[in-house]
Length: 394
Image (cartoon, rainbow, N blue to C red; front, top):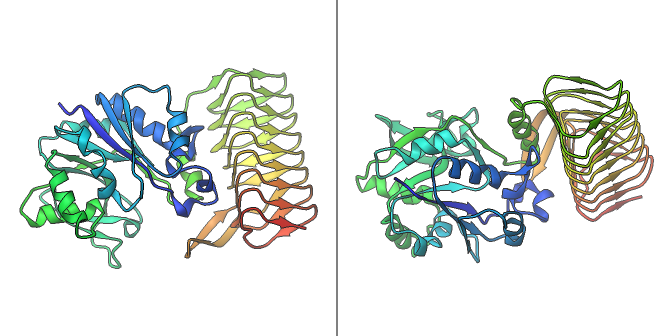
Protein backbone atom coordinates (compact mmCIF):
# COMPACT_ATOMS: atom_id res chain seq x y z
CA UNK A 1 0.00 0.00 0.00
CA UNK A 2 1.32 3.44 -0.95
CA UNK A 3 1.65 5.61 2.15
CA UNK A 4 3.39 8.76 0.95
CA UNK A 5 2.49 11.56 -1.47
CA UNK A 6 4.56 14.45 -2.75
CA UNK A 7 2.60 17.62 -3.55
CA UNK A 8 4.28 20.32 -5.60
CA UNK A 9 3.29 23.76 -4.28
CA UNK A 10 6.32 25.93 -5.02
CA UNK A 11 5.25 27.69 -8.21
CA UNK A 12 4.15 31.29 -8.63
CA UNK A 13 1.46 31.15 -11.30
CA UNK A 14 2.43 34.19 -13.38
CA UNK A 15 -0.61 33.92 -15.64
CA UNK A 16 -2.85 34.38 -12.60
CA UNK A 17 -1.66 37.87 -11.80
CA UNK A 18 -2.72 40.12 -10.12
CA UNK A 19 -3.80 37.50 -7.54
CA UNK A 20 -0.46 35.68 -7.45
CA UNK A 21 1.41 38.90 -6.72
CA UNK A 22 0.60 38.28 -3.04
CA UNK A 23 0.01 34.51 -2.90
CA UNK A 24 1.13 31.39 -4.78
CA UNK A 25 -1.24 29.77 -7.25
CA UNK A 26 -2.02 26.93 -4.81
CA UNK A 27 -3.66 29.47 -2.47
CA UNK A 28 -6.21 30.75 -5.02
CA UNK A 29 -9.60 30.28 -3.30
CA UNK A 30 -12.21 27.91 -4.68
CA UNK A 31 -15.53 28.02 -2.82
CA UNK A 32 -13.67 29.86 -0.02
CA UNK A 33 -10.95 27.24 0.37
CA UNK A 34 -7.46 27.27 -1.24
CA UNK A 35 -6.86 24.82 -4.08
CA UNK A 36 -4.05 23.10 -2.16
CA UNK A 37 -6.42 22.23 0.67
CA UNK A 38 -8.67 20.34 -1.75
CA UNK A 39 -5.63 18.39 -2.96
CA UNK A 40 -4.49 17.58 0.58
CA UNK A 41 -7.97 16.51 1.66
CA UNK A 42 -8.35 14.22 -1.37
CA UNK A 43 -4.93 12.67 -0.77
CA UNK A 44 -5.56 11.91 2.90
CA UNK A 45 -9.09 10.67 2.15
CA UNK A 46 -7.67 8.21 -0.41
CA UNK A 47 -5.60 6.50 2.29
CA UNK A 48 -2.25 8.29 2.10
CA UNK A 49 -0.67 8.70 5.54
CA UNK A 50 2.07 11.28 4.95
CA UNK A 51 2.52 14.25 2.62
CA UNK A 52 5.78 15.90 1.59
CA UNK A 53 4.81 19.41 0.48
CA UNK A 54 7.32 21.19 -1.75
CA UNK A 55 6.99 24.92 -1.17
CA UNK A 56 8.83 27.93 -2.59
CA UNK A 57 7.20 31.13 -3.82
CA UNK A 58 5.61 32.92 -0.84
CA UNK A 59 5.87 29.69 1.15
CA UNK A 60 4.93 31.40 4.43
CA UNK A 61 1.40 31.95 3.08
CA UNK A 62 0.97 28.21 2.51
CA UNK A 63 2.60 27.05 5.73
CA UNK A 64 0.69 29.50 7.91
CA UNK A 65 -2.66 28.47 6.44
CA UNK A 66 -1.93 24.75 6.84
CA UNK A 67 -0.27 25.02 10.26
CA UNK A 68 -2.93 22.93 12.02
CA UNK A 69 -2.85 20.05 9.53
CA UNK A 70 -0.89 17.02 10.69
CA UNK A 71 1.42 14.59 8.86
CA UNK A 72 2.76 17.19 6.44
CA UNK A 73 6.50 17.73 5.96
CA UNK A 74 7.50 21.01 4.33
CA UNK A 75 10.49 21.13 1.99
CA UNK A 76 11.64 24.37 0.35
CA UNK A 77 12.58 24.51 -3.33
CA UNK A 78 14.90 27.53 -3.42
CA UNK A 79 14.64 28.10 -7.16
CA UNK A 80 11.69 26.98 -9.27
CA UNK A 81 13.18 25.35 -12.38
CA UNK A 82 10.59 22.68 -13.14
CA UNK A 83 8.52 19.77 -11.83
CA UNK A 84 11.34 17.20 -11.91
CA UNK A 85 13.68 19.61 -10.17
CA UNK A 86 11.00 20.20 -7.50
CA UNK A 87 10.43 16.48 -6.96
CA UNK A 88 14.15 15.94 -6.40
CA UNK A 89 13.83 17.93 -3.16
CA UNK A 90 11.69 15.10 -1.73
CA UNK A 91 14.34 12.43 -2.27
CA UNK A 92 15.52 12.27 1.36
CA UNK A 93 11.96 11.55 2.50
CA UNK A 94 11.09 8.76 0.03
CA UNK A 95 12.31 5.15 0.22
CA UNK A 96 9.22 3.35 -1.14
CA UNK A 97 6.70 3.75 -4.00
CA UNK A 98 4.82 7.05 -3.82
CA UNK A 99 2.49 9.34 -5.73
CA UNK A 100 3.12 12.90 -6.86
CA UNK A 101 0.51 15.58 -7.47
CA UNK A 102 0.37 19.27 -8.36
CA UNK A 103 -0.90 21.42 -5.52
CA UNK A 104 -2.73 23.73 -7.91
CA UNK A 105 -5.12 21.25 -9.58
CA UNK A 106 -8.43 20.05 -8.15
CA UNK A 107 -8.54 16.23 -8.01
CA UNK A 108 -11.08 13.88 -6.45
CA UNK A 109 -10.14 11.25 -3.84
CA UNK A 110 -11.61 8.33 -5.82
CA UNK A 111 -9.22 8.97 -8.69
CA UNK A 112 -6.27 9.24 -6.30
CA UNK A 113 -7.31 5.95 -4.68
CA UNK A 114 -7.42 4.21 -8.07
CA UNK A 115 -3.91 5.48 -8.82
CA UNK A 116 -2.64 4.21 -5.47
CA UNK A 117 -4.07 0.76 -6.10
CA UNK A 118 -2.95 0.43 -9.73
CA UNK A 119 -0.74 -2.61 -10.25
CA UNK A 120 1.90 -0.92 -12.40
CA UNK A 121 5.05 0.53 -10.86
CA UNK A 122 4.72 3.54 -13.16
CA UNK A 123 1.32 5.13 -13.67
CA UNK A 124 0.08 8.45 -15.05
CA UNK A 125 -3.33 9.99 -14.45
CA UNK A 126 -4.88 11.37 -17.62
CA UNK A 127 -8.05 13.28 -18.43
CA UNK A 128 -10.09 14.10 -21.51
CA UNK A 129 -9.96 17.83 -22.16
CA UNK A 130 -11.72 20.07 -24.71
CA UNK A 131 -8.52 22.12 -25.20
CA UNK A 132 -5.72 19.54 -25.07
CA UNK A 133 -3.23 21.78 -26.87
CA UNK A 134 -2.85 23.82 -23.64
CA UNK A 135 -1.26 20.81 -21.92
CA UNK A 136 0.88 17.75 -22.48
CA UNK A 137 -1.12 15.59 -24.89
CA UNK A 138 -0.88 11.86 -24.12
CA UNK A 139 -0.82 9.31 -26.93
CA UNK A 140 -1.88 5.82 -25.88
CA UNK A 141 -1.32 2.28 -27.06
CA UNK A 142 -3.25 -0.46 -25.24
CA UNK A 143 -3.96 1.99 -22.37
CA UNK A 144 -0.24 2.58 -21.88
CA UNK A 145 1.62 5.81 -22.58
CA UNK A 146 3.24 5.74 -25.99
CA UNK A 147 4.44 9.36 -25.91
CA UNK A 148 3.62 12.80 -24.49
CA UNK A 149 3.81 15.94 -26.61
CA UNK A 150 3.77 19.34 -24.89
CA UNK A 151 1.27 21.80 -26.41
CA UNK A 152 1.23 20.27 -29.92
CA UNK A 153 0.09 22.34 -32.89
CA UNK A 154 -1.82 19.37 -34.32
CA UNK A 155 -4.08 17.49 -31.92
CA UNK A 156 -4.39 13.77 -32.47
CA UNK A 157 -5.40 12.73 -28.95
CA UNK A 158 -8.11 13.93 -26.56
CA UNK A 159 -6.20 12.96 -23.41
CA UNK A 160 -3.89 15.23 -21.44
CA UNK A 161 -1.44 14.60 -18.63
CA UNK A 162 -2.70 15.82 -15.26
CA UNK A 163 0.82 15.74 -13.83
CA UNK A 164 -0.26 13.11 -11.27
CA UNK A 165 1.99 10.05 -11.16
CA UNK A 166 2.84 6.91 -9.26
CA UNK A 167 6.57 6.18 -9.15
CA UNK A 168 9.04 3.81 -7.47
CA UNK A 169 11.93 5.51 -5.60
CA UNK A 170 14.38 4.75 -8.44
CA UNK A 171 12.78 7.64 -10.34
CA UNK A 172 15.13 9.97 -8.45
CA UNK A 173 18.17 8.42 -10.14
CA UNK A 174 16.68 9.14 -13.55
CA UNK A 175 15.76 12.68 -12.53
CA UNK A 176 19.32 13.38 -11.33
CA UNK A 177 20.74 12.25 -14.67
CA UNK A 178 18.45 14.51 -16.65
CA UNK A 179 18.63 17.57 -14.40
CA UNK A 180 22.42 17.43 -14.68
CA UNK A 181 21.86 17.99 -18.42
CA UNK A 182 19.46 20.89 -17.88
CA UNK A 183 16.20 18.94 -18.20
CA UNK A 184 13.89 19.85 -15.34
CA UNK A 185 10.36 18.68 -16.24
CA UNK A 186 8.71 15.38 -15.37
CA UNK A 187 7.23 14.98 -18.85
CA UNK A 188 10.75 14.62 -20.29
CA UNK A 189 11.71 12.20 -17.52
CA UNK A 190 8.68 10.04 -18.29
CA UNK A 191 9.39 10.15 -22.03
CA UNK A 192 12.95 9.01 -21.35
CA UNK A 193 11.70 6.05 -19.32
CA UNK A 194 9.29 5.04 -22.09
CA UNK A 195 12.12 5.18 -24.65
CA UNK A 196 14.02 2.76 -22.40
CA UNK A 197 11.15 0.27 -22.61
CA UNK A 198 9.46 0.96 -19.27
CA UNK A 199 5.68 0.61 -19.43
CA UNK A 200 3.58 3.43 -17.97
CA UNK A 201 -0.06 2.61 -17.27
CA UNK A 202 -2.81 5.23 -17.34
CA UNK A 203 -5.66 6.04 -14.97
CA UNK A 204 -8.46 8.32 -16.18
CA UNK A 205 -9.37 10.98 -13.61
CA UNK A 206 -13.02 11.46 -12.74
CA UNK A 207 -12.72 15.12 -11.68
CA UNK A 208 -9.64 17.16 -12.46
CA UNK A 209 -9.63 20.93 -12.94
CA UNK A 210 -6.90 23.46 -13.49
CA UNK A 211 -6.89 27.23 -13.01
CA UNK A 212 -4.52 28.68 -15.61
CA UNK A 213 -5.91 32.18 -16.22
CA UNK A 214 -7.83 34.55 -13.91
CA UNK A 215 -11.14 33.86 -15.64
CA UNK A 216 -10.72 30.12 -14.91
CA UNK A 217 -11.43 31.05 -11.29
CA UNK A 218 -15.05 31.64 -12.32
CA UNK A 219 -15.44 28.27 -14.04
CA UNK A 220 -13.79 26.18 -11.33
CA UNK A 221 -15.70 27.91 -8.51
CA UNK A 222 -18.94 27.39 -10.40
CA UNK A 223 -18.20 23.69 -10.91
CA UNK A 224 -17.20 23.11 -7.29
CA UNK A 225 -20.39 24.63 -5.86
CA UNK A 226 -22.68 23.02 -8.40
CA UNK A 227 -23.62 20.18 -6.05
CA UNK A 228 -23.42 21.96 -2.69
CA UNK A 229 -26.03 21.29 -0.03
CA UNK A 230 -28.06 24.10 1.48
CA UNK A 231 -26.65 25.17 4.83
CA UNK A 232 -27.71 28.23 6.79
CA UNK A 233 -25.43 29.05 9.73
CA UNK A 234 -26.05 32.80 9.70
CA UNK A 235 -29.28 34.75 10.21
CA UNK A 236 -31.94 35.46 7.62
CA UNK A 237 -34.39 38.30 8.09
CA UNK A 238 -38.03 38.13 7.04
CA UNK A 239 -38.94 38.59 3.37
CA UNK A 240 -35.71 37.06 2.11
CA UNK A 241 -36.12 34.63 -0.79
CA UNK A 242 -33.74 31.68 -1.10
CA UNK A 243 -34.03 29.38 -4.14
CA UNK A 244 -31.94 26.31 -4.88
CA UNK A 245 -28.89 25.33 -2.84
CA UNK A 246 -27.51 28.21 -0.81
CA UNK A 247 -24.76 27.97 1.83
CA UNK A 248 -24.47 30.86 4.30
CA UNK A 249 -21.65 30.87 6.84
CA UNK A 250 -21.59 31.58 10.56
CA UNK A 251 -22.31 35.13 11.74
CA UNK A 252 -23.42 36.24 8.28
CA UNK A 253 -26.65 38.19 7.99
CA UNK A 254 -28.99 38.54 5.00
CA UNK A 255 -31.31 41.52 5.32
CA UNK A 256 -34.94 41.88 4.27
CA UNK A 257 -35.94 42.02 0.64
CA UNK A 258 -32.89 40.14 -0.64
CA UNK A 259 -33.15 37.39 -3.26
CA UNK A 260 -30.57 34.60 -3.57
CA UNK A 261 -30.77 31.89 -6.23
CA UNK A 262 -28.32 29.02 -5.83
CA UNK A 263 -25.94 27.49 -6.18
CA UNK A 264 -24.44 30.28 -4.09
CA UNK A 265 -21.85 30.15 -1.30
CA UNK A 266 -21.59 33.02 1.21
CA UNK A 267 -18.80 32.88 3.79
CA UNK A 268 -18.67 33.88 7.46
CA UNK A 269 -19.27 37.33 8.92
CA UNK A 270 -20.93 38.81 5.84
CA UNK A 271 -23.65 41.45 5.58
CA UNK A 272 -25.91 41.14 2.54
CA UNK A 273 -28.64 43.67 1.78
CA UNK A 274 -31.26 44.81 2.24
CA UNK A 275 -32.72 44.29 -1.24
CA UNK A 276 -29.70 42.59 -2.78
CA UNK A 277 -29.96 40.02 -5.59
CA UNK A 278 -27.39 37.23 -5.89
CA UNK A 279 -27.67 34.81 -8.80
CA UNK A 280 -26.25 31.32 -9.52
CA UNK A 281 -22.57 30.33 -9.50
CA UNK A 282 -21.58 33.13 -7.16
CA UNK A 283 -19.08 32.66 -4.33
CA UNK A 284 -18.74 35.34 -1.66
CA UNK A 285 -15.86 35.10 0.83
CA UNK A 286 -15.67 35.95 4.54
CA UNK A 287 -16.42 39.41 6.02
CA UNK A 288 -17.90 40.77 2.80
CA UNK A 289 -20.43 43.62 2.77
CA UNK A 290 -22.89 43.99 -0.12
CA UNK A 291 -25.08 47.06 0.25
CA UNK A 292 -28.67 47.62 -0.85
CA UNK A 293 -29.96 47.30 -4.41
CA UNK A 294 -26.79 45.65 -5.67
CA UNK A 295 -26.82 42.65 -8.01
CA UNK A 296 -24.16 39.94 -8.39
CA UNK A 297 -24.18 37.20 -11.05
CA UNK A 298 -21.72 34.33 -11.66
CA UNK A 299 -18.88 36.03 -9.81
CA UNK A 300 -16.24 35.38 -7.16
CA UNK A 301 -15.98 38.00 -4.42
CA UNK A 302 -12.97 37.29 -2.20
CA UNK A 303 -12.66 38.03 1.54
CA UNK A 304 -13.19 41.47 3.11
CA UNK A 305 -14.61 43.16 0.02
CA UNK A 306 -17.01 46.07 0.51
CA UNK A 307 -19.54 46.68 -2.28
CA UNK A 308 -21.63 49.84 -2.17
CA UNK A 309 -25.29 50.25 -3.09
CA UNK A 310 -26.67 49.98 -6.63
CA UNK A 311 -23.72 47.96 -7.94
CA UNK A 312 -24.03 45.58 -10.89
CA UNK A 313 -21.39 42.82 -11.05
CA UNK A 314 -21.41 39.81 -13.39
CA UNK A 315 -18.90 37.23 -14.66
CA UNK A 316 -16.17 38.88 -12.60
CA UNK A 317 -13.56 38.22 -9.91
CA UNK A 318 -12.94 40.82 -7.20
CA UNK A 319 -9.81 40.46 -5.06
CA UNK A 320 -9.54 40.47 -1.29
CA UNK A 321 -9.95 43.75 0.57
CA UNK A 322 -11.22 45.84 -2.33
CA UNK A 323 -13.60 48.72 -1.60
CA UNK A 324 -16.17 49.48 -4.27
CA UNK A 325 -18.45 52.46 -3.83
CA UNK A 326 -22.02 53.01 -5.01
CA UNK A 327 -23.37 52.82 -8.56
CA UNK A 328 -20.50 50.65 -9.73
CA UNK A 329 -21.06 48.74 -12.95
CA UNK A 330 -19.19 45.96 -14.73
CA UNK A 331 -20.25 45.49 -18.34
CA UNK A 332 -20.13 41.82 -19.31
CA UNK A 333 -19.61 40.67 -22.89
CA UNK A 334 -17.15 39.54 -25.55
CA UNK A 335 -13.53 40.59 -25.05
CA UNK A 336 -9.94 39.90 -26.08
CA UNK A 337 -7.72 39.58 -23.01
CA UNK A 338 -3.93 39.58 -22.68
CA UNK A 339 -2.09 37.62 -19.98
CA UNK A 340 1.72 37.29 -20.00
CA UNK A 341 1.85 37.97 -23.73
CA UNK A 342 -0.94 35.49 -24.56
CA UNK A 343 -4.16 36.74 -26.16
CA UNK A 344 -7.46 34.98 -25.45
CA UNK A 345 -10.91 35.75 -26.83
CA UNK A 346 -13.74 35.21 -24.36
CA UNK A 347 -17.44 35.29 -25.13
CA UNK A 348 -18.90 36.45 -21.82
CA UNK A 349 -16.53 38.02 -19.32
CA UNK A 350 -16.76 40.92 -16.89
CA UNK A 351 -13.73 42.27 -15.03
CA UNK A 352 -10.74 40.90 -13.12
CA UNK A 353 -10.01 43.16 -10.13
CA UNK A 354 -7.00 42.65 -7.86
CA UNK A 355 -6.65 42.97 -4.09
CA UNK A 356 -7.05 46.16 -2.07
CA UNK A 357 -8.42 48.33 -4.85
CA UNK A 358 -10.34 51.51 -4.03
CA UNK A 359 -13.00 52.27 -6.62
CA UNK A 360 -15.08 55.42 -6.20
CA UNK A 361 -18.76 55.87 -7.08
CA UNK A 362 -20.25 55.79 -10.58
CA UNK A 363 -17.37 53.83 -12.16
CA UNK A 364 -18.02 51.54 -15.13
CA UNK A 365 -15.64 48.85 -16.38
CA UNK A 366 -15.82 47.45 -19.90
CA UNK A 367 -15.66 43.67 -20.62
CA UNK A 368 -12.39 41.84 -20.11
CA UNK A 369 -10.45 44.52 -18.29
CA UNK A 370 -7.83 43.44 -15.74
CA UNK A 371 -7.22 45.84 -12.86
CA UNK A 372 -4.11 45.16 -10.79
CA UNK A 373 -3.86 45.18 -7.02
CA UNK A 374 -3.96 48.38 -4.95
CA UNK A 375 -5.35 50.49 -7.76
CA UNK A 376 -7.39 53.62 -7.12
CA UNK A 377 -10.09 54.83 -9.53
CA UNK A 378 -11.81 58.18 -9.12
CA UNK A 379 -15.56 58.73 -9.57
CA UNK A 380 -17.30 58.83 -12.95
CA UNK A 381 -14.51 57.02 -14.79
CA UNK A 382 -15.09 54.44 -17.54
CA UNK A 383 -12.30 51.84 -17.64
CA UNK A 384 -11.60 50.80 -21.24
CA UNK A 385 -8.13 49.22 -20.87
CA UNK A 386 -6.14 47.20 -18.35
CA UNK A 387 -4.67 49.01 -15.34
CA UNK A 388 -1.33 47.81 -13.87
CA UNK A 389 -1.00 47.30 -10.12
CA UNK A 390 -0.63 50.30 -7.80
CA UNK A 391 -1.89 52.82 -10.35
CA UNK A 392 -4.27 55.73 -9.76
CA UNK A 393 -6.89 56.71 -12.34
CA UNK A 394 -7.88 60.34 -11.83
